Image 1 (cartoon, chains in turn purple, blue):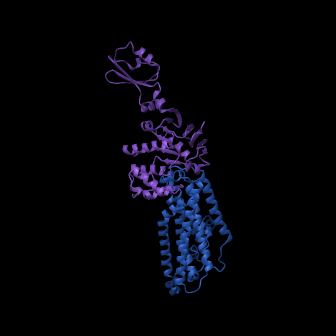
Image 2 (cartoon, rainbow over the protein chains, first blue to last red):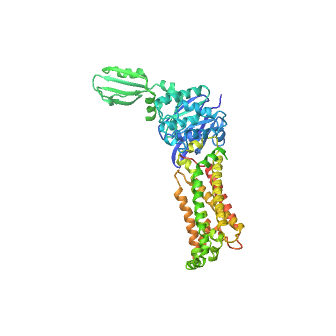
Image 3 (cartoon, rainbow over the protein chains, first blue to last red):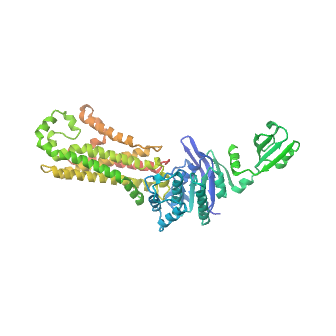
Amino acid sequence: MSVPIIDITDLSKFYGKARGIEHINLGIDEGEIFGFIGPNGAGKSTTIRILMNMIFPTSGSARIMGMDVIKDTKKIKSYVGYVPSDANAYSSMGVHEFLSYCIRFYQIRNGEERISELSELFELDLMRKIADLSMGNRKKVSIVQSMLHKPKLLILDEPTTGLDPLMQSVFFELLRSENKKGMTVLFSSHILSEVQMLCKRVAIIKEGKIIQLEDIENLRKKQLKKVSIEFSDHLNKERFSIPGLESVISGPNNIMYFMYSGNINELTGFVAGMKIINLTIEEPSLDEIFLHYYKN
Amino acid sequence: MNRNLFLKEMRKNAASLIIWMIVITLLITLTMSVYRTFMENQSKIVGMLSVIPKGALQFKGISNFNDLLSVLGFYAANNVIYMMVLGSIFSIVLSSNILLKEEYNKTAEYLLTRPLTRSNIFLSKLSVISVNIFLLNLVTSLAGFICMELVKTGPFSIEAFFVLSLYTLLLNLLFGAIGLFTSTLVKRAKPVTTFSIGLVLIFYFIFTISKITPGISKIGYLSPFRYANVDAINPSYAINLWNLTYFIGLSLLLTIISYRIYNRKDIYT
């Protein structure tokens, strides 16, 4: 069995008494595009900052490519690219000056070519000052600097904030292409749809704990169904109760919406004696599944 | 140390360094330019100075009015305020912000994700502080020396001038270490410039008060200015081993503590 490229064991971080993350265990395989999902404050950035040795864990350990993130941080970082959630580069520098400064940290021969190649791809004006750039353009600079040295592992913390849909598409295409060449990606986001577009596996983090680690497809195939029933007469919400029924909403025109995680036969059996005009059973979207996990 | 980081920081601080060099050099030049006039009217000026309380002159390192008649004594008296106080403000402002600004400008996320250890970062920034302080002292001392050569009316001791310059450099380096230490204690990133300048002025105030008030002269030992002897005209003027140990020892101690804190510090952005 191969060693995971990111191996997190029982990792916890507390800021005084405040919780950052608690007992996180996570393994990400080489060559994966792995999604890390959770709302703001769930612990995504805390986990990533420990991996990048910006903060130290309270307990537990994390390894990247088999190396300890604290002891071997210098070696690890020569293989890792990172896009922070805030794209605040050195505002007094020009774009080209900043990218040249970044690339000089690595032993790269064709640095200038790489800067030109990526800047052209993202339509980035190298002559401008970073202070004069829009949020979206700063994000592009941040993405370009992370990929200059052709990292083996790319860690992205909310990378699409500020990017327009066209650039998002260019960025995702680049990620897919680099992934095919062997680059592993850890993609942290609170937007499930963009994770769905790229990732095969996803970890859902809630209040500092990983609550679900799943293949995207499996997540979809979970028994959770989105159901809507239109009754001919008004039906009291309280009378509609069977195991597996969640998030029941009474809509207008005697329509009832809910999520159902039980046996479909039991549901159809339960409603068989009722006067129904229409019954719809659908696959929920990933966002709806995500919300379901969060509410529970 | 990382060369790339060092050069980038040197370039970034170059404008500030040059401005401070120009300001201090101008102040020294302006002050020294009145020395000839001072000498031509010495009897009147010594008469005027005689009405000033002795203690008020002592804090400037003047133990005798006649000290001012020597070009080195004149320079030393003014060197205190320009090179020691202003140089220390430059040093502490630079050192207290050089690590911290990466946090409050949120650029630490770029710096700390490069193939560097915390030690590499700390040592590179420490080198920038040391080189900047050294260059400021070199240029301003050289300016002082040239001014003295131009306006002198008699010979002055080069050795005493060297000792005075060394004390100034050591004092500036100590404030550099104090600034670095202060910045590592700040948990949440915010600029500490005002606090740092305040610290230099408080130490200078303590030193001044202790000099002019004999009853509380001992509190002067709390201030680093107390250990930088500016009595350059004194025939026995030389580097004092205890003072040298104080400056080097305290600077090293604060730097080592700062290094250890920075190596284990959570960096927030």
